[in-house]
Length: 183
Image 1 (cartoon, one colour):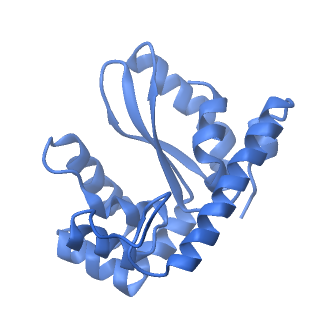
Image 2: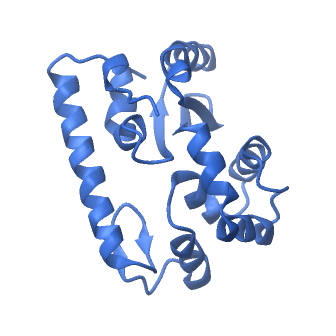
């Protein structure tokens, strides 16, 4: 996994616009994944980001790029706390919630749709998705929208523009270090 994968799939988080991004990657073996994550986290962690595997197999992983400070803020919102409590999470402390999310992703049970809270999606949209089982949304883009459609459209456009800009900057030779906005 090259830093380009992180840029392509995580630009809004790198730019400080979004709490987190989730994306798959492939790798030759677990030792290589661990080495790559360590290398990338040496760049990301001092700038307020983390890259963690939420689920991994023999040659693939589901990676979570996130800003711990934004995650703590998001999970502390009353509606997010209520949704997490309803879903059986042990409080709203990010470390405990991430541990529980990891457990749910690796258990083979139903997909934990509350994951949207970890990605910075509006709690009302996460609740709507869970309640309507992904149907009857007002808009579908970066996520399915059940609440403020206009705000979501604007957000989707910002994320799309950010990703296009970051990919262009990467293609011109700008390194990951230069693309991370410190928040």
